[in-house]
Image (cartoon, rainbow, N blue to C red; front, top):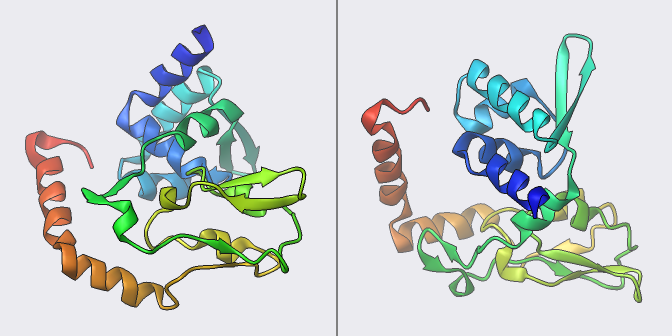
Length: 192
């Protein structure tokens, strides 16, 4: 129970959560994390230190750069259980964006499981192959699993990602929603 409280405490801060989310797909330098969080470098460094003290991340120095990675595999598991059933308030099942694995091509390397922080994939030890277990956890427009798959075994129903996402933006008025979110986040002098 104490370990779960430690993890939830670490993830309760928006900046720390953004940092952890940015590390779901692998190790990053502070210079890569800062733009992903939309926070200043000193703010990110302070929160990284807190995450390291809580045992959530580990760091290593390479020359003048410091690289961070997730230290606790339970964090990835907790975030994979998050509810991704909506995208901008729209039922995710209304959008045909999810990975498909060609079992003939799949070599069972597990790369898709390792790089996806949303719990879309699981490894089936009996078949020695990855499987799509939670297709609607997939972030609309994300095709990193297909890019990273060395066997080119992963594809998506929509062939033209940009066209597909742009059509959703228009259909659901998402650009206006994004603008509203940005303006609301700036109210009150939030550092962003």
